[in-house]
Length: 529
Image (cartoon, rainbow, N blue to C red; front, side):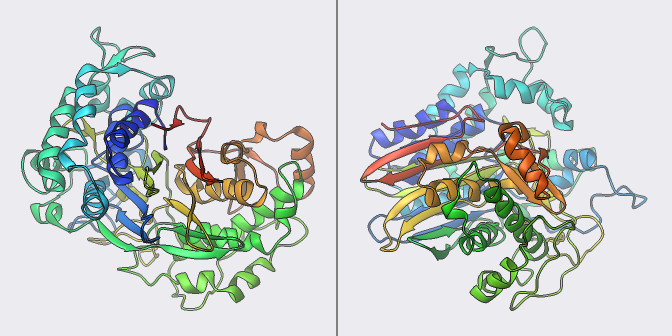
């Protein structure tokens, strides 16, 4: 089974599985195709975090491909020469926004450990499609015609310019021959293609250009970005939930589910206002902690064990009253917690998720991103550069857990999940894009799927509610008027949220039958070979 955000990307993964490829082989092919057909959301000059489940051993490995800041990065880099802070739009379009890409390094590491087909064979179908072209979809067109800063950046305008000189419209053919050339270089040289050679040189040169050019040295590009780590797992009733450790936000997903597990939400349902009030209040507590404590653990102590300790979870849960608190909750003091400054991270959206299960039962759950839509608005080799460094906390508070530092990874909301039963057997995989809403999107689906026994597709389709700080954002119109009124009476006033829709994609295994699920808010599909 393959589930991804675009039919052509799903088909690219299926084609690999038909040839006997393993889950990681298919995931690489899906990512390559997403970089062509969904370039506003992810690409090979971005970052990714993936989990791999090995059916033979039952082991789950986490591969972190989160970008790193170059050695020249510094706390004041998103300001002009007079130390005035850049606007967010100007910061995202600056050369300083781009981190050293990590997705290829993470995929290469995972492929070396778990792949079956040769690396060089996984890119040619997408290279051919890039030359032939494909029809612009409504979602891609919405971003081409978007009003956000990157949509009007010169590189983006040129990339999506039609033969008549106008921006491509729905149904027009988009070709990207430069991307085809880049894929063939990457197929031959692997992640080394971004360490040295023409693509690496072009990347460094484009980052250095105005406005607000930055320095990305050969040493930066040769640095190790991808790494394998142990997955972060916790038992939850009949299951084991596994996700990625910091700087990912899997600890937030686990904390939210553990907070909810001590309530009666499992005996309720989606039509009960108390369900959503409990979900909102637990979410607010989780985000207060996540925002304050999660950063790159190579630079700051992240109190993962303290955040997930049963006694701490119980103490935080006790703060949930009979109605929504009028003030935003403060972060708690879990065991092992440092005292970082307040966080000022502002994380926009531009991400994708995919899930793959192969014939042997191996699985991949992978979230991938270039940060905001079309990244920094700069293009090299037909690929959008990421703007991941604006995911740092770059306002006041240089000692925040997520503050900028050379070589540091910014905190990520990406939280791919793999679910096992208590015997360690695969139950399912899920994840989502959505910026800082990702933990809430995933937890909502887990509640519907695991607690209420909904089919995964139906759980994904449940309305989204993202409660963070003093805001209750969500799909306001998807909640029936009577339910919204009842929630309002409990202090939860849902308003249409800013940011990206969910793009939940996943696979569930029940009674030896795979069920694929794709978020109806996007254009993806789940399918089998």
